[in-house]
Length: 287
Length: 158
Image 1: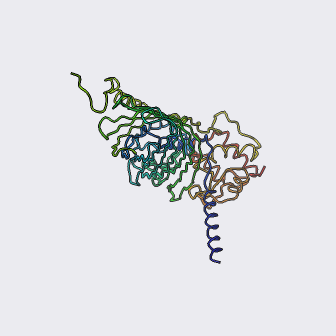
Image 2: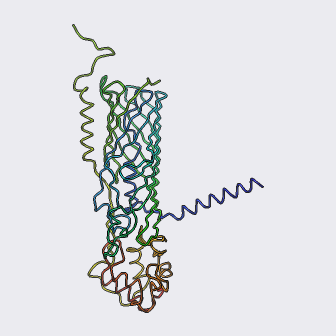
Image 3: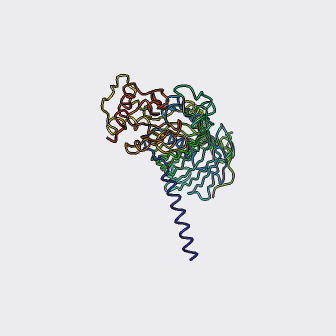
């Protein structure tokens, strides 16, 4: 009997979750809303950003350049009558840890805690693992890499503090006028796989190069939370699923014992071309 | 006497300099990072000054296409929220059920659409005053008159 009740409870839970999912508005792949979300997800992608390190551990910070969107690009989305508030920052920082327990294996993680930066509260987790299937150390070698990323970024995206200060009696008014700054959540989730070629160091102490070609599946969700001038809540949930190819390549350089600098060029078609830089400190000899 | 480096020969100077040069190059590229977004223009259906009013409009053929392209868009009347007073305009049947003889959420107790009387309909007043649609340019007079004609002819399910 207890088992039956448990099964029923699980069933009710599953139905509740399914019901919640049906409440979301599915977006077409080519809709502006989906494309904008995909743009930021591509900027947040957990790319290799460096050749596999020659140390057992390394800890550092990545920085990604994020080109701001023009007024025209921000106006053609989410109802269009106003500017979406998306240009919070021109760089995205992310701490990254690397662990190379075996010459043919590399484990990576990136994490950003839920603290307010640049006017938003991001919380991000990224995981990656790479396996060398051909080649040797200090020779060109081939890796296959899988990565996962999940983020929850909260901020006044739908209606900024500036937008709600518009006069609601102005004709035509925007939907934000007279309301409260929104508290929206952008929740991207990405699964990706890529093939990476890693080159030898250009002489002892010189930089090592790498390049990768990858594919990712993105599940993008935007939870609107805006209270308008009349105190009424807009809580539409938008969901998009995108598939995307991307290429990246760069160099890793160890100018001083343990200190490592990485640079990467990344291009995701229909999203952005950008550069990532990383500074890391490594220690321990790899097995 | 030749100086011997511990651990092997040093690479040529050009290669030693390659690391910072390449990284500086990447940094320069970063400054030129750019978007590759391909976005669609906002819908402008029903906003052309040359729009001619339809004398005997049909809900499905003439009115709903205006609702679909200008009102039932993301962030507006695509799902029911408090903010849009539950008004969904995604298809002809849903639209009619939500507007004909239904009290306005914003201006109660007036009705959104009073069949046969556009002058007493909140919908007609809101598009006349450019209060709606909020997305994109205001509706043209021809388009507004098409909607009013449909209301004045009984707001039928046709």
